[in-house]
Length: 338
Image 1: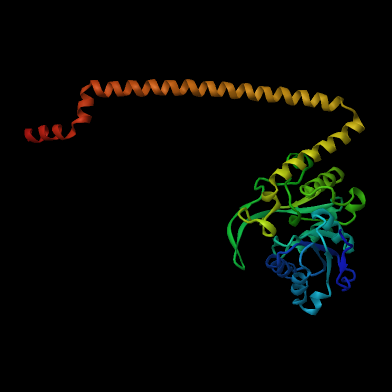
Image 2: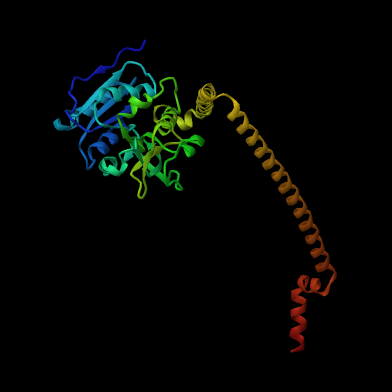
C-alpha cells in the first residue's frame, strides 16, 4: 500500500522564484553531492523539494540536517513509504513548490555553478517571453562508484551537433534530459503534468507536449548541465537507460502509438496513410540502393582478388621476382664485380 507523502514540517522559502525538485531513493552518496551542487549555485533564489521515493528516510534526513539552518529552511522533504515512480515523484515535488520556474535535479546529476542564474536570465529577457523554457548544452559524465567515492571515467558532449530545440528533432529521439531543462510553471496549466503511467521515457513524452504547445530556447556554449551515467552499476546506483533498456523501447513505441491515435482521431487516417506510403517507398529505395552497393562491393572484391593473383604470377615468373627472392645472391654478384 502506498501512503500519502510525509512532510518534514519545514516551511518553503516565501517568494522563491525557482522550484528545484530532487528525486532520490537510497543513494546517499549521490544525494550529498546533489545538495552541495544545488547550494553552490550563484543564484540562490530557489526552494528545494527533495522527494524520497520509497527509500530509507533516515539517510535523507541525516543529509538535509547537516546543511546550515538557512539552507534547511529552504528544503522540504516528501517521504513516500513505497516508490510511486519517477513521474509521480516529479509531480509531487512540483506541486509542493510554488516557484515561477521549475527544474528537475535528480540526485546523481549536477550543474555548472551558473546554471540557475543564466537560465532564469534567459527567460527574463523580453526577447524570449514567448518561450516556455530553456535547455542548455549538456555533457555526459561516465562515472563509477568505487567504495564511497564517485570516480569520473570519461566525458562526452550530449548531442554535440545540436544548435536549437525543435519538435521535429524531438519526435525522432529525446534530445534533452531533466537536469538540462528549466521551464515556466505555467506550462503545467497548458500541457498538464508528467504522465504517471510511464515508468520510463516520461521526460521525453513531456517534452513532446511542451514543444507541441510552444517554443523552447537553447543556451549553447560551455556545458551548464552534467548527466551522470554508470553503465556498469546495478540496483539503486544504476541508470534506468541501461538497466531498463527493453522498457525504454517498449514505452517509446507506446508513446508514439498513443500520439498517433490522437492525431488520427482529430484528422482522420488520410494524411497518415499518405505519409506511410511515402515512407514505405523510401525504405524500398534504400534497400535497393543497399543491394546495389553490396553487389558493387562483391564485384570490386573479385577484381582485387584477380589483380592480386596476376601480381603474384608476374613476381614469380620474371627477373624481378628472382631479384626479390634472392637479394643476397645479387648482392654477392655485384660485390664481386667491384
